[in-house]
Image 1 (cartoon, one colour):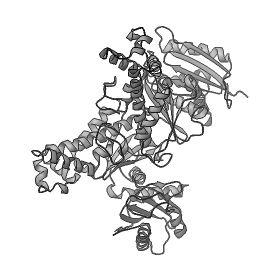
Image 2 (spheres, rainbow over the protein chains, first blue to last red; image 1 turned 30 degrees about the vertical axis):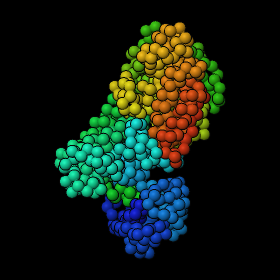
Image 3 (cartoon, rainbow over the protein chains, first blue to last red; image 1 turned 120 degrees about the vertical axis):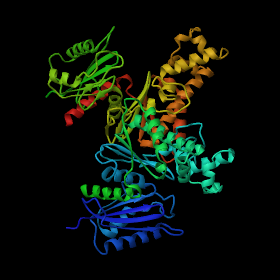
Image 4 (cartoon, rainbow over the protein chains, first blue to last red; image 1 turned 60 degrees about the vertical axis):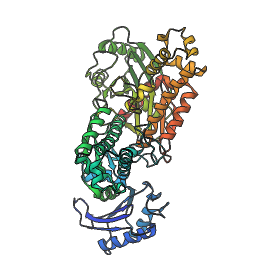
Amino acid sequence: MNKKILALDFGGTKLAAATLISGQHQWQNTRRQLSGNSPNATTDLEIMRSLIRELLGNEKPLAIGISFGGPVDAKTGIVRLSHHVSGWENVPLREILEAEFNVPVRVDNDANVAALGEYKFGAGQGCESLFYITVSTGVGGGWILNNRLWQGTQGMAGEIGHTVVQPDGPLCLCGKRGCVERLASGPYIAQQVRQSLTEQSQQGEIIRNLVNHQLDNITAQIVSQAANEGDELCQNAIKLAGWAIGVGIGNTANLINPQRFILGGGVTKAGDLFWHQVRQISRQTALPEVDFEIVPAQLGDEAPLWGAVALAETALEN
Amino acid sequence: MNKKILALDFGGTKLAAATLISGQHQWQNTRRQLSGNSPNATTDLEIMRSLIRELLGNEKPLAIGISFGGPVDAKTGIVRLSHHVSGWENVPLREILEAEFNVPVRVDNDANVAALGEYKFGAGQGCESLFYITVSTGVGGGWILNNRLWQGTQGMAGEIGHTVVQPDGPLCLCGKRGCVERLASGPYIAQQVRQSLTEQSQQGEIIRNLVNHQLDNITAQIVSQAANEGDELCQNAIKLAGWAIGVGIGNTANLINPQRFILGGGVTKAGDLFWHQVRQISRQTALPEVDFEIVPAQLGDEAPLWGAVALAETALEN
């Protein structure tokens, strides 16, 4: 009997597809491709169809799970929009693929699907409740409560990046001051360091040398590197990011009391300075009676694909 | 057939018991009594037993639900402690009453039980997800998610009062700065106004007259009254409280995206100034896509008793 699960990841401008045999914990086959220049929903879908043909030929999967990089109505499987690719407004992605393949299809946004992936196959195995947080270009997350996804009444749960932790802090793109994302996301870490270097011409020798004094080339990754090499200005930037994530986690622990926090995304690779700060500040922010663990994500960029497998499998349970 | 539900409320130093016929929405009978001087767990239990005898005689209820004013392990029904009454450490309240009455008993802490009460009988009817917040001597709350209580992995969920919204704010009893409770609870509102009046001898004429210049007599209720009569210093205190609750609600909406927030407790009776501030700041703090309602609690002091009925009924479903 056919037991093949098809997992799809519409990851902004990166498309990926993979198959595995239901119940197994390794890929049978994977395919990846970039969206290319001026992509839109139609070209994305065409590329994805060709990846699927390479993986499956004419074979039919048992079910399809999809991670989508943007807001989705998980109940209906209708994509609301993509922030990166045009033409995704109100596309009934689930219906389209159910019509093409005549098998159950489930769709959810990437943060929720990644949370499900870590829960089922990664750092969240054995947990009843967890909050998965990605600290990357943005800061977002996904909830598992009572062993299932909690998406919120409109599918908007998990926006820890736009909780306010410093009301008199710097202005975020969302219009508020002192959001977690404004203090901890990769682009904002880089921006903050660039600004400090412009204002304080005597500081940051290490990072200035790392980018040959081309401040525009500064990224959060280079800030981490400079911090690890002893650049004090960069260490302070990493500490501020860790502080913001720490307050966000501590507040969340008090509100929801989940068993575990799982942290993924590029910024979490900043090293001990970041992790120490996150652990210390979150512990200080949570009430003494509120216990929790903070662990690194295990699945990296594959979390959405693994989560898509888990999502497809929920379709088979129903 | 006997369909009588017994609801008990160990509310700090106030004890209450009530009966109703399962399925009905009005009390058959209620009894209330204060714990009295130097109460302890044994005297509290004796008073409660006498209230129950008055209500039931020798009749047996179908099930018993209990709201307890302190941390409880809801799975086992063991009280951890009471902050108001001594001797409650590790008392197996559920087991004691199951042994005495030989019927199913369920126990949970008052914030969770009140949330359940509002969900089943009050301002949360018809909601799938809600957060009940009481703003009173302390600030706490209880969650309904997916039509059931969410207590957290250790039963500690709902502590919105100890989320930090102003990291450089005043010091809270919990050791942190700028907790919601430190800015919005009744006693802290009164303390803040007393301090401002001491520091600013030209201000607060209205409230000074209301307490005949005895600043020790200031309560949050009197602060509200003075604010409503035009006292600017008191208006600012109420606005600060509303701001803290507003940021707390906005952050919570972004994190969990519940359908409705229900606000109860003495401070929420402060009037339009408070409610306007809560609504405006929470709307500004939540992302534009995150919708929610904020409504006043409907059950007042009876929320824990009504919730105890709902809790007892869950015991009958299992």
